[in-house]
Length: 414
Image (tube, rainbow, N blue to C red):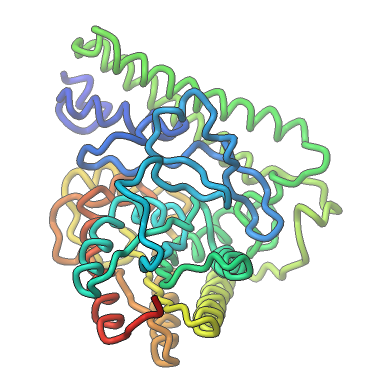
């Protein structure tokens, strides 16, 4: 029991063991997709697994991903356009149903599936019309991927009636923490240099292979431990936790080395155009301005086809003064070593200011960074940005309030 506390910072409890195993399995490829317990977000597949290059969106998921043995029991499947949806719906939506598309990165992905039902319920009652949530978000998406996704869907006649764009974190953090260290154009998709190398670097293959092996090993051990009678042994669980934390640290170090790996400087397809590196502060300012421009274009594009556009700046734990943290959050959600922390702390202020400018221009922009300011319960589940069920519910109700207020007096085309 003492050893467990020394490793985890919390006293031993079997529900805590189950939660950590779900988390380890989730990081290794979707072990927790069907788990609905408090504090467990919808699992996002392991890095690159199931992802394929898309000619306009950077990357999406291939429907072939559904055929994997580990995915056959998942409630989420990949559709023809490369986005996830629920395997089984209660009933086919009516032809005149109001389609609400959720755009953004992994936070928007989890929000769409955990908070979507709240939005459907609140909005359908207010508008007296069936409402259907459609996820158009993927882990790692940042502008211009949200903009390009909307343009692509509109060109196919598949645009939703309402666009909810929940973003900001990836847009201010990833160009600084990932693109800059690798020398990749900041507004290229995440890890683009490693997705498109014509001749993969042997170092990249070794590091990526080792990282993928560790992901699989963590998931296999988590699944085996969850089904073994030894799961009732505190000693066994301590040994498992100690080993898993070591593997997790090793995996994080490998991913860091992959991000910093030097590639052939002449490989334009991977690097993109030159971008003057004037330091992190200037990069954050440029990223925020680009984020603002893409949102402005999404609004204009949506209005051109009668689509309603709503932009929400997502909450994050590194926004100063945005939440009173629980003890659990101080343990798992705040990490001084996390490479995303500094860009978020320093860059969110610029996002909020530029978002206010969007609102003054007539864009329906809404700052949700203070959404948890009065919440003392835990809502953050990791040291990046993701919410638990409570966090998604709070955000969903705030989003729903905005939609009801701004759509309530508008009769959308049916």
